[in-house]
Amino acid sequence: MKPESLPMTVRRGARIPAEVRKAINEENVLNLGGVYGDKRLGAPVQYDQLRLILTDDTVEITVFNRGIMLLMSDDERMRRIHRALGRLEKARGG
Image 1 (spheres, rainbow, N blue to C red):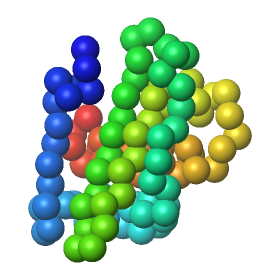
Image 2 (cartoon, rainbow, N blue to C red):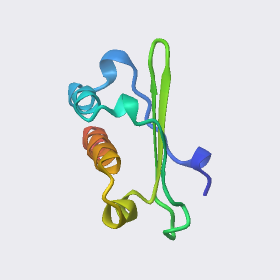
Image 3 (cartoon, one colour):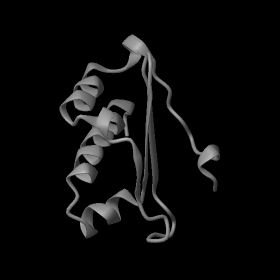
Image 4 (cartoon, helix red, strand yellow):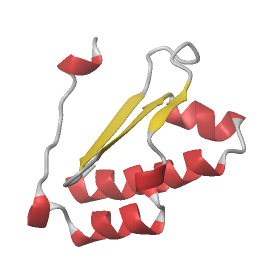
């Protein structure tokens, strides 16, 4: 399965839950753009992608095997991304 074929949730402006906006600010997610994790570590691969489109910038975060990376590393950036994604999943009903 390719990332392009995975389900996607799109929210814009006021439709972004306040809890999610708060998590993005609290975890300073706008400064965490990049690719994290290792897609060779799991089977099947866990894949998270967060794209924040701002007025004058786009921040994209891609995480492979988030659970494994949380266990194997002591990276505060991974913990911050995990907390923000967790709030997003909870708001989505997941």
